[in-house]
Image (tube, rainbow, N blue to C red; front, side, top):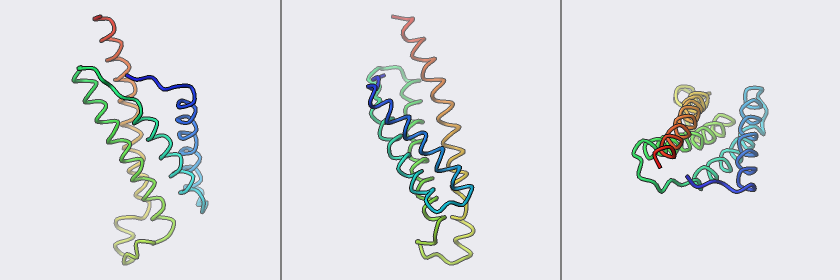
Length: 133
């Protein structure tokens, strides 16, 4: 795996912190929360996509695909937060309540579970790969 530089690691940590602040503020019904989460998600996802894996281990490749799915879910969560802040999609109230209202929580939960799983499994797979060499 390509290691991030110190600056990139700080940007990634800042993005993660902004996502935490944004999600907590969204629960507390702050109007700016979706924007903070969205900026944090963009920073976090951009730095995660810079970490590339050039090896041949199929397990790590599969886990990297799961990370990308998690990144897409984080961006979808930011979009759902923005849609939850105001009905800018101009949906019928019934459709809005059924498909948009607070569904960002589900996307965030699935993304967080995938992030936790893949971070531990990728490090274990890379350690196993390093021991073989």
